[in-house]
Image (cartoon, helix red, strand yellow):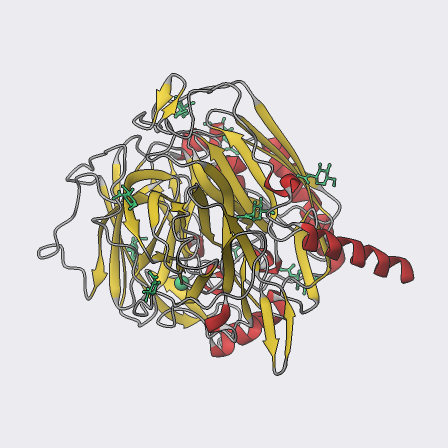
Length: 571
Ligand SMILES: *[C@@H]1O[C@H](CO)[C@@H](O)[C@H](O)[C@H]1NC(C)=O
Ligand SMILES: *[C@@H]1O[C@H](CO)[C@@H](O)[C@H](O)[C@H]1NC(C)=O
Ligand SMILES: *[C@@H]1O[C@H](CO)[C@@H](O)[C@H](O)[C@H]1NC(C)=O
Ligand SMILES: *[C@@H]1O[C@H](CO)[C@@H](O)[C@H](O)[C@H]1NC(C)=O
Ligand SMILES: *[C@@H]1O[C@H](CO)[C@@H](O)[C@H](O)[C@H]1NC(C)=O
Ligand SMILES: *[C@@H]1O[C@H](CO)[C@@H](O)[C@H](O)[C@H]1NC(C)=O
Ligand SMILES: *[C@@H]1O[C@H](CO)[C@@H](O)[C@H](O)[C@H]1NC(C)=O
Ligand SMILES: *[C@@H]1O[C@H](CO)[C@@H](O)[C@H](O)[C@H]1NC(C)=O
Ligand SMILES: *[C@@H]1O[C@H](CO)[C@@H](O)[C@H](O)[C@H]1NC(C)=O
Ligand SMILES: [Cu+2]
């Protein structure tokens, strides 16, 4: 027992050491091949540049970036309060995955959590013709049982900022996530890259222990929020934990890669008295625009450039991540999810005032989010799918509330993933698999997602950037709401407003089984998902049956011996 405690102490120390100023922690891989990309020529990238149509063109470097990750369960205190967590290589966020545009990425994941399966999803990564590497339990693989490993391989055909996270149960919310930085060109110049900055919410109890409450009475209160894995926690007269701090040198411009990794919190992010120049939404470079406050929904990313031009105003400024109450869980530390940006040698408590925007859960204005590489959507779709979102009873327990899409709640089995069925040429999928078949190549699919309920949902599609054709409140009426087909917002997560609609489009250019789901942690597990089985016969050709079936066999053996019962929808 004593030995186990020593181990816990060591792992907790690893978390505390991950300071942003430790050069090991920042560890941004410098470019060798594309020396043309400098502080004043960020749009360049060797033979390519910011105007390259990266959906159809781009470098092949021949470089393979290989990572070895281990997921463990241990005690840690990101905000000063100890609890049991799960993390990759002992840190929350996990190690940042760096690659260059055109590299091949290989990630070996070992599951050392004694009582959970796992799978790792690379959020927003297109997985061009590599669908079996999408890392979604019950869709593209069986969970990896304790003691086993899996290898994911994909090519970085996009560049910018994204994240990876567990796609097994609620494991991501116990700490199994980290950033992905793919170096490439940018639509505006900056001096230094500060890397990823996670905004998340946090409970003092493991997410698994709160799942029953979430299903019975709705989303439980979040105890805190974390800025890149740290914050203070105030309990009566006692304050524990420490704030995230960031050092600025006057006159320098910084690129910060913001990621909302929360379970149930929509944030507005700002740094007092500073302006942000936004250069990308999700993995899509955009025409730059300036803003003081950034709305960031769950799963979304924004790359921003911040000029350190306020040194004459103060030495210390609040960095604020404010949960928007219109669509987020209540949060005990609602007003105090803050970091400190400081000029000078060390941080101290700022006395600056915030910008004070109104509370709302709308995406940034579509007129600001203009993709740099312009694309047009066909004015007629080969398929138009209507997907109303409603609420109903869980398939396993009528007392639990689950989410329904088009009258059906997702209910998959860990041991029978969609790709196993695709391999067997199944065409009549179970109705609870919520499969939409899109068999033809390179056709447009329109998806109309709507809800009459007063709950907003961040909608995420795997394997594609989607085009936002319409988004608003009220009932979608195709005769009165015009669709925007001319270079509309393009990204991989967009907000479905409460009592509103979201119309998205994508092209069938990537065979596979691709999930579309709500990125609120509870809703993901409570059935708010459908899947597109795109070009099924070609998707089958991409499957490595031996790996798929070996993982499933190992999983079935472990699940039977552990007696673990599946209580969620499998994803
Ligand atoms: C946030 O944490 C990640 C992982 O430790 C690290 O790579 C990154 O540099 C940190 N970001 C900042 C801005 O310090
Ligand atoms: C995606 O994969 C297909 C099939 O291998 C290939 O033809 C295409 O060039 C790839 N796209 C990119 C951007 O690499
Ligand atoms: C993670 O831990 C493994 C050993 O379990 C080690 O081989 C690897 O280098 C570590 N990776 C990172 C990025 O920390
Ligand atoms: C994951 O492990 C935790 C404890 O370590 C357990 O409470 C939970 O039930 C497990 N969940 C699943 C889905 O395996
Ligand atoms: C700093 O920002 C606050 C809030 O926007 C504003 O009231 C104040 O005037 C600003 N201070 C300076 C010196 O610009
Ligand atoms: C944003 O503001 C900065 C500083 O005022 C300015 O240099 C830059 O051109 C602005 N960017 C845009 C897109 O307006
Ligand atoms: C929606 O449900 C109806 C009725 O069950 C069904 O006919 C239709 O195919 C479903 N649509 C989709 C996109 O699944
Ligand atoms: C599925 O279809 C492929 C291609 O037509 C065929 O080779 C394979 O044998 C089929 N598998 C089963 C289980 O029917
Ligand atoms: C359909 O669901 C039933 C009951 O849950 C299950 O036994 C069966 O394996 C499923 N079939 C497929 C193809 O997933
Ligand atoms: Cu939702």
